[in-house]
Image (cartoon, rainbow over all chains, first blue to last red; front, side):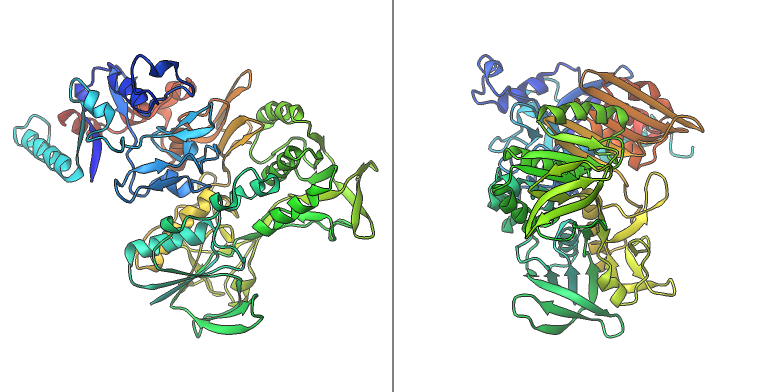
Length: 169
Length: 431
């Protein structure tokens, strides 16, 4: 099961991921033609800043996803193949219950259509458009196990090298 | 092991999913008193004006829990805790049977209240709770030119908009001084009053119906408490719901306004002990308000789904804790304008409560703080990232370090992450 992971320290807030996301989810899929489309292409990923630090915010496709549980029309569902949380626009009624319950605030509104907009992990692509476009590799698309193993090892090494204080010490 | 779920809406389905997640082989039986396969109850106003095809309102079989034995048109009338059995009345055959369970979930929901008003109990007067109710309103609206809706709450307004869609002249009567009084405060209600007016729906506030007149089987008019007489072909009543407690009472379970439960959503016996094999979830339950700590019966879809998941998990051997529910957790779009309201939004400032409100055109934002906590939120128009605020309310988070960001228009999850304890920070940096 692959997921998008963020390494915030590598993010330069160039917004290439936002642009690539909107283009990928357009009809023309072209940086030149897409902006003129109607309905307007929308991004599903957000690069924010706080406290002078960049923080890209992405849909986690949560295991017990609050948006899926709360959806009153059966539009939000977990794709049995990719395990991604997807919004079926045929069923979405634009009640915005998902916007109200998403703890990360990553569900948007397509105002022209009155439909909820969210990350779908770019079905059909090897890696989502945002990840493929990220110039600094702040975004990676990896198996959850691989990523957490790497993270564990890096942390252990850092603790071993005393570069960060041990808990309680 | 046989799990029996009484009820087939938000709580029942969520429970079936949770049971299946833990236990792929146990028998799961779902009993529904309605003749339709499980559907999305909040969508039924669409049936009145037929905007959404019916097949898009029922649950998709491919997304239903595997191996779920759904029995329709069956009402559980009696519960015997000692023998672990239910008595079922089958509406289609007229027969009844004794039905054993190992674990039981009572998710019987709630039914609309019909106030004791002369003439309100008769033909031409409708409530809006089930698929059948919506079909009946649609049928009555067919030949109607005027309709009166009693109650300007969520359901009343949905019914009013649906009827207006069909070209029916609609008058909404509300006893309180504003529309959608539970979900909106005075300022946001004023914004929506404009949107409602633009659709041609008439609202009469501060009044109620005193009498409904009929000629033969036809409703002809509604008389208000001040003597005004409104010509009408039908009346829709939307003044709230009351938990369906009959089954719980027949088993001797403890009830108050709703069915009482412990923090694992087990029901309680008369002596206050938890009934180990009988759980409850959804609109039938009386629980604790997550924000104020008061005892509430909520009638909210999201609460029902959360309770269902927790109860189902515990029925299948889990140990999930229910922290309480929201008495207000509402998102909707009325007259093309979206609104989200969460928590304790009606609190006046003072006594440790601070209220921030800001209106720009039809955009409105209100935040209610108590001490270092955010306890209430109203957003009209621009509702993006409302979920982050909702999470702060739910988690009873200390927001004292976030005050500035919260009041600004661009509060986001990043602010929340950076305000979390330093150990998280360090971990993020190393990665």
